[in-house]
Image (cartoon, rainbow, N blue to C red; front, side, top):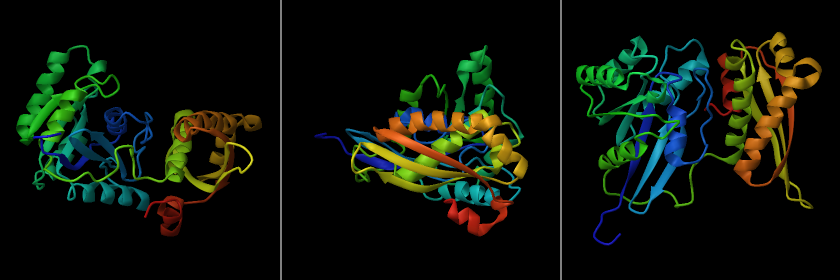
Length: 299
């Protein structure tokens, strides 16, 4: 690193729900930290991930999607997303170029006009587009109208153009210190990530009306003294009795499948065998209860 200045800083990843923010961050960092599903509003909290290279470090902040809130949880998610914009060196604004640029994207672009932070427009999901030239033209039209600083088309899932995007991000970082150790990829505690992985599997398997009413609380997290096994007990909260039956499934089949899929990811994360015990409880209107929100990690 002789003769080169070390750069470091913070990059917020924003966009409307379900445009690929978490996939992009996981691909850039190279580790699955933020959960992914095809349902909107998957990310509920601000998750910081760290990308360390020999001459720079980028701290990515994966924020909840900006949307019109319908409850206190939604209000919290929007507050988290907006506050992130005031604390970073560069904003990575993602749009889904496959679905097309719509009213939600334009609403965010309008809010960003008041922000002085540099903005990179990232048109994601070009792997799903047949006519890439047309997709690039639409993205460029939007970029020119909104007066963003940079524009790039990518496929987060296939890593297309991600090296180029990384270089653009780093170009906006100031000379600064190394904020985190090189082997650290997130500032989130293991319990939080484990709860998110359980919620991800529920999002994958359950019907559309159930997932938004789901919260996961880690009740216990203990390593056995006699074996290399971690015992984890977690409760999945839902808002309706009918939802509890759906989550458990006939003969407990759905809950077992959620647990099986979650355990596989948790074992990869922790690097050890895991015994996962899942429970399902009804907690009506928890998304509008401030105490419940705090208990489930939404401060």
